Length: 162
Ligand code: HEC
Image (cartoon, rainbow, N blue to C red; front, side, top):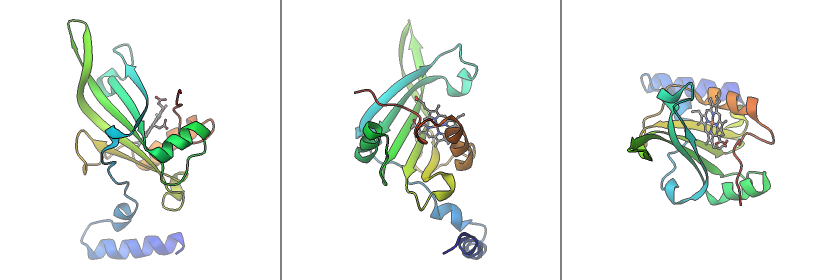
């Protein structure tokens, strides 16, 4: 189906379902169940000197499913690649820093057809520990815009170190 047709059908279903916008569901990125058992790609820390420490500060980890690991090694990410960027607050006690509560789980899923409008990757942010609550902002388009602006060899910005 061509895109305008998809939108029209989605609008019709949306009106039928009294307020639910069906297209959003259709393109939804699924929660990455069990991602903490995947490969660990890298970690980083955003410290108190950072301008956005209050909203971003803490520890973050990147995880990749097996297909995405192939992508990290070849820089050609196959369909079905899933990458998770997990953001945690930090908890400091007597100079010792540990993982604090989870801020959010950012997910990228490679599906060139489904997410053609955002460079072949689906983007989604899940709030705190919720598997269903999605962040209102940034929107997937805003996620894509930043990754697209910063890209070097594709929309995946981080690198894997053997
Ligand atoms: C302001 C720019 C910016 C925005 C907006 C942004 N990202 Fe990123 N994102 C980055 C950068 C830079 C990295 C690489 C971090 C690193 O190397 O540790 C990254 C890394 C990631 C990764 C790990 C894979 C990769 O590309 O390295 C995922 C997954 C991710 N972002 C998802 C999202 C999602 C989902 C959103 C929207 C909710 C989003 N990002 C919004 C800049 C951005």
